[in-house]
Length: 109
Image 1 (spheres, helix red, strand yellow):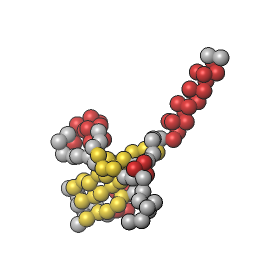
Image 2: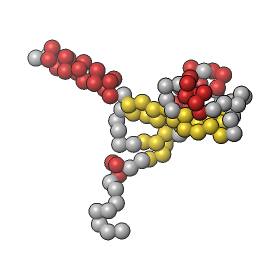
Image 3: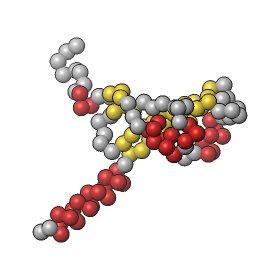
């Protein structure tokens, strides 16, 4: 490998654990113990992704699931296994906190 061709650590993806499965189980207690989560850290400060795979009782299609969600279904396998990527980029929340900080600094002057 020639010098300068490798990517820097701040620009890499890093697999890690996540609390998203725990949070989902708090919202939907019937899912406790039935799901797990994986996180991929990326060089963004205000975002997250959850990779969800569900086995459903009724045969379905990607179009049917997409009709129920605003996100996109990645795959439907054999009609009963659904894979969904759900993510957010919290720039709105971050922007609101910056406005709060600016107001706090302005008020202290």
